[in-house]
Length: 141
Ligand SMILES: [Zn+2]
Image 1 (cartoon, helix red, strand yellow):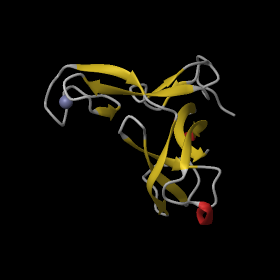
Image 2 (tube, helix red, strand yellow; image 1 turned 120 degrees about the vertical axis):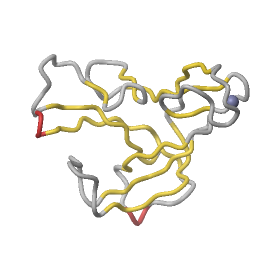
Image 3 (spheres, helix red, strand yellow; image 1 turned 180 degrees about the horizontal axis):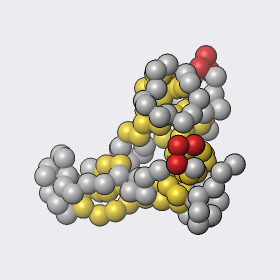
Image 4 (cartoon, helix red, strand yellow; image 1 turned 135 degrees about the vertical axis):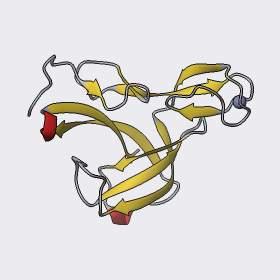
């Protein structure tokens, strides 16, 4: 497998997935919580979309949530490096945010709304620029 020049894994988006070791397969989802109204969001935020307060604090989100919705993607985004077709799942976290990501280790016929999903972090090769990045996905609990 190709590796990046430093040998240290890189997150697909450090504002959303913070890696916690150098294997690139361990990490946590990050978000922000509004101190005024307690609403949480996934990833970056400069103000609260519920109450417009800018009194936000960074938080670590749960690694487990509930499948809220899903779809099968047969025509992926340009330069999608993974399997096709793939299942895109929308998982609701206990803190409130919904997180879209590929569902792995689950046959399409086995997927059910309401099932528990665990965060899974996979290394994905990007052949165009010879990099390997860590990507967050969902798998059945
Ligand atoms: Zn708020």
